[in-house]
View 1 (cartoon, one colour):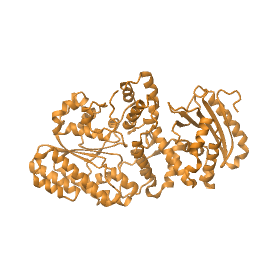
View 2 (spheres, helix red, strand yellow):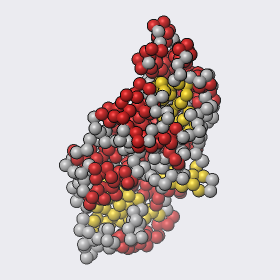
View 3 (cartoon, one colour):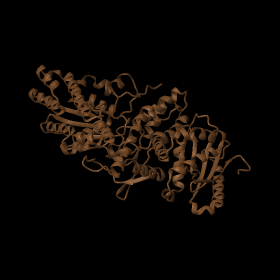
View 4 (cartoon, helix red, strand yellow):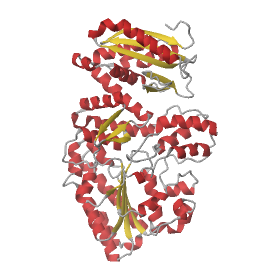
Length: 577
């Protein structure tokens, strides 16, 4: 089987050990053709940023010239090298592992990472440093002073080579500080913060001709204020359409990878259709042509597919990715505005989209507004660009795994507002009886209980069928043997909820649900609504998609906070109701 580089972010190791590599080296030519020299590139977690940075290291570093052909010979850039190949001194920083629990720990971690980078730089180019300079660097207490000691040493040596500064996860600790401690965030990133002072020193080194190129990666622009104020030379490539596909997999690339792994063309077509729903959907420019797969998620699935005897992995979302994205839930609490975020989340889930003005530069002095919050969701990969619409950008949830995370968090907030724990509801048991025994009564009664305790009289005025559907999906979503759809399209009709069996899961039924909701004042219309629900469900079960022996239909009518009536049907029954 093809060797897939799951978790491998060292370009040299990947190439030498024969792992699959989706060639992205053509973007080195594009980078070298840019009129600007100092670049920032943001992408969500687990997209492949570190591997790309490693490729830059081996392509531009003078110390790697002897292995250029070995690493790049069969790639685009090996056949079309640029003049800047192997012509820089590489200074590589990584801020991904900093303890941000306190200001002191954050500062110490930042200094330690800068010092570690300095030691690596010295080991790469020992001829540029004498023992006295090395001792001075070790004794420096401030991160900016460590960098200045390095650049001063280059001045003394009068080397013809310039530094290419590579910074991985420039914002990682800043994102955590923003979520957990906004005071420390401002003290670290703000006007007099140590991060800004460090980048001011970087800027001075560029002016002196010592740092010739810069490439920073990260997830969000929350620390960009430290760059634009003290370091206003950076060019952000994040939203430029030419760089949309610099990391990640396009649909054709993912389909090709399945074939290279030995999956038949017939199976590959079926798989890619599902993978598009689960892991694809990311766009980083309003002018982007192709949507992208998250690299880690795609490779995780393929490996799991083979480990599970050519069946879908037991867990469709990699636990390593899940742990990263679960941290994102903390941003819903920023500024103690969780209730306001709850309303926004419900809007996104109900409408399927949200329009707003994207924030490009997060100021540490500005209030964390709704636009900041929504923009952060985009940069973190929880929303993605759909299209430009009359001045504002329309954003959507990129794929099903992200939708799952949203609904799980929505469910958590809903039950928190309800003032009783999920465990007390026996949700899993209720769903199990619904899907395996074809009896939805316990689950529908459970939904009734959530409505009664979750919505005040004032809320009930605004509560409607969309809210009912969103709440119900939130309760169903943890049951991961199904992909749960809202308004699933089939033969130009749209059932409210469809529980589609995940391939390989031995579930008895696929489930179609039709919901109706009435305000208390409209109680007299219950019989009419029941009749309408039955009729629509009957139409669904007669479509090609649902006219199967294992299709279970459920209809339910709620009035206010009460379950008024419900029923079930199957497509093979003569008497459906």
